[in-house]
Amino acid sequence: MFSCVSWLQPFLALLSSTLLTWGYNCPPSCLCPDHHTVDCTGQGLTRLPNSIPLDVRRLLLSNNWIPWIPSDFLVLYSDLVYLDLRNNSLTKLEPGTLTTSSRMVYLDLGSNNLTEIPTGTFGESRSLIKLRLGNNPFLNMVSKDAFSGLTSLRELELERNALSGLDVGVLSQLPSLRVIRLEGNPWVCNCNFAKLFLWLLENHHKLPTGLDGVECFLSGDGQQVSLSALSEDSFRECRGMLTLTDYLIVIFSGICISVAAIIASFFLASTIHCFQRLKAKRTDEEEGEE
Image (tube, rainbow, N blue to C red; front, side, top):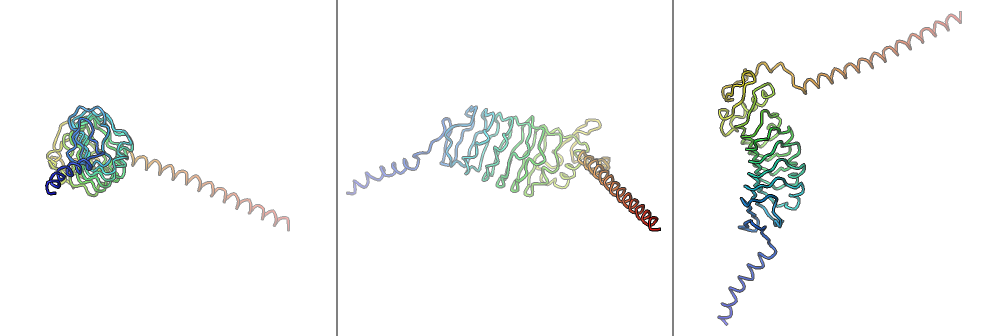
């Protein structure tokens, strides 16, 4: 009896292990160290792998040649919290690709060929804590509302890109931001940069390299200087200058005022004309009575 039980123990263990892994498919050329991790790092992939488990939480796809992500890719992977796409060949992000990643905490898109980060790229990814977008040598445009809705974002990396300017609203709308990396960009210290500089001056503690590590080109002579060498007075000539938005507001306000003045003049002239006709009518009636 005892020998039968001893013989059954390894069999039951093997059966249990088989049942636990039954139905769990690891993509070809990838490693799956546990049931929630898929590691396809450095496998020379030119597209996203097939047969990714639906309950994957950590997906590692760095150091491949993946050129794009289908817009519906993340719809099925609602448990995904960690996505590493570093060092691939991504040139753009399809609209809505990342809007369904409601649980994602970590996203690495660094060292790709992205050219811009448009509005609504990340949707309402309110759980996202760390976003890496550095080392994209062609990334020269980040829309003002590109990170709208990322209320939990603490770390944002935009270092070593091709950014010459950045709307300060991109950063000021991130209430949880603790770390921002901006070094290694060809910043131009003109009037468009003034508001961003003032924000960085006030939030210099969020820069890992400090103001010393961020440099910009002076608009006058093209000399590259550290932001720590500048001050508010460096941009004093910009204080009286209006932005394009300001000009549009002024023009629109002027048009509205002109239209209102024309309408008011029309009603005033109509009112005066009515009074004149009424007065003339009364005069005629009085003369007729006499």
